[in-house]
Image (cartoon, rainbow, N blue to C red):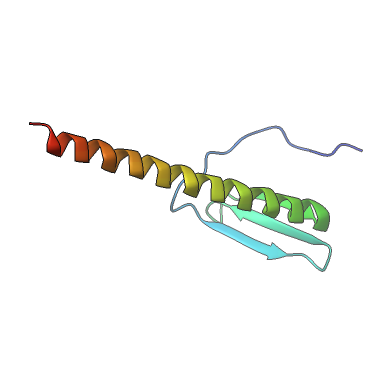
Length: 84
């Protein structure tokens, strides 16, 4: 049995309509896009749990990177302010 049944990618940006829901006790789905142009991901329980675990780790890493970048910008601005 194949583990993936589609071969495409989507670029999802802020403001995109996202909806998550369960389908019984053993499946979940994520719908992406406007209601007339939906893309849907369907997960069994174990796969959805793994997706959430990995997505949470990536989100934390993105937050850490954003904080590091902001600290660099502040440090650079401080250097600019102190050097005529």
